[in-house]
Length: 405
Image 1: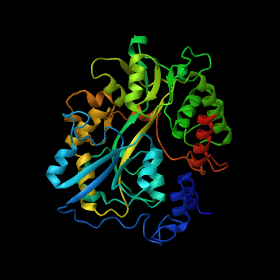
Image 2: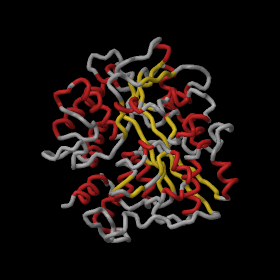
Image 3: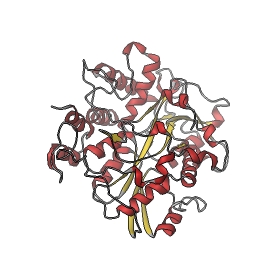
Image 4: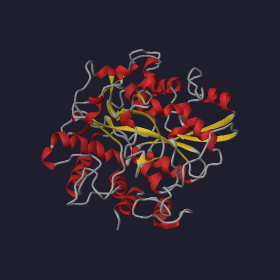
């Protein structure tokens, strides 16, 4: 079996629809050893030839919370309405809580663009659900931070499948009233002797297994983990054992940022893993939730806006991609959600002039111990060739077993 075929099958995970696509059920035919469908045709077909012209129609947007605000959360936070007024494209927004939910929703064919994290993007590419993107048709792409371009989660075989949106670390969130100084370690989220029994809230998704792996990288170096998404069986079993050890500490596994923030604010949860957005929402009327990146490092995200393979509103889709990574809008999104913007020019346009400093947008070294979500595959992502690693479908199965046990 070819490397690309192996990667493709592993990246699709347990999804029946995507697995069917991996077995040759797509409209564009099978794949050769380069990953190209039908020989020279990239997965998902050829990119749109352009030019991007006047467009009308309804663009159905699938997005992480906070990425496509239309004024319904806060009347002052709205970059959807200006897009509609400028382009004539009507926008409908659906938000999702996890990458698995995003993939499942995108499979329905109801959505034209999606903000995909690295643990979803390859599944969409190898499932031939998204199309290659001609970045020359996205003028603002030129100002994206170079280190976000051409990465394994947004580019396959040299073909771009989207536009980077922004990046951030999955932080340690804590109840500010209980911690006059920010915690410096994840230890109380993991260790059996933690004082926080029934007071921690992990992320409710299989990709959270990587958070256990990050902690093990720092505390059990003999395991030899180099990449938290590249775990051989022994390393994976150790991560699952740590997650089992954590279970007595858990108040609930979170999937709703509002509910998560409420738990931290009222003290039913004292520590959680999550996003700056949770704290931003909870702190609307005072600083009740704090955030920090602990000394062991963290998982994180570098998200990509991707376009449905056969969308009927491709002009609106390209205009949306250019809109959300424009300096002004990318600054708004980054500040509202709590992340580093993708567009370098955005740093001069945030309302808080220190935003990019706070989120380390221009500090390459800050990201050295932030491990961006990536789809685990049987071929080890850390370069090992003398063993196989646990693929994503097995992560999903293990997580389901953990949660139901």
